Length: 363
Image (tube, rainbow, N blue to C red; front, top):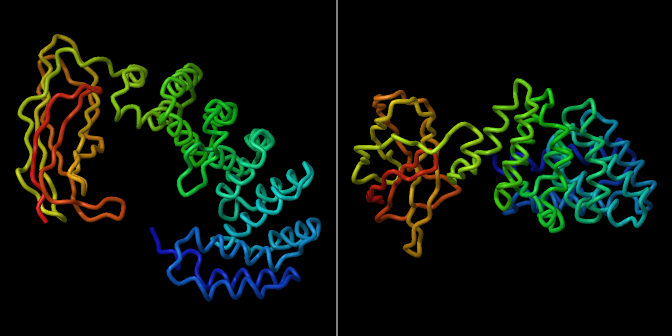
């Protein structure tokens, strides 16, 4: 991912200040904000510029709305400068104290989202008035613009990355089902992917609700539904959830065994771990299998935390032997710190663990 200064840096703020000038607004605080970006993460920068915008833009709500509309009217008002604008809109609209002002704010977010996204700012609106915001999102599901339809799904996700949690939404897991029910057959892959991620979010705490929803969708599918459901059930599949596996046609792997599971005895940070095994179907019927592997990473405390990775999905014929070969990279990544010492790796077939081996990670 690009660095914060490549997304919301001084050039973006300078361009935003220019848009403010064209709109007839002050830009003093906005210009000043870019001078204190050093060491700030992207969200911190957005919050800083949001506060600067609120200082520069009119205090009167009607004048504020007019100023934002003047910004939106400019083609140059796009990209990462839009994030703090959406946050300023949500801040003012949620604090304005009237339903009309709130709805006007939602309308501005709808206008702004095609320029980047308003999904993060929508969280402020959801926290302020969940039902009113969900009602608006429901109306957006029929919008012509795919960005607006995606906002309906993405902005209301229960665990949207980078975004604030909405406590009331977490206690009402079915509150957003009408939105994603309306969008799972959307013609845009951009929207459908958001729907899949939205349903996958729910699998953290509500696997039964997720499987029931996926079952309904598969009963009334289009050409893209099967793929969408597979993506939506990915977390449950990795967990070995029997109901999710069965829905996708992966029953208990009767007659199937895993033999000869082995890994390289050692691997260094930056290297690749070799994995091999043989999948054997000793039965007299073909078996549809999904094979995952789980790496038990050693933590600083000495405990082991497992993460599941996809390996293969195939149909194994009666009497067939299938060689499995894979390498797992231990290249440094920002989301995980590696600790040397004993690690472990296991393989699961249709959610059933069939082998476990150990290896040592070297510095």
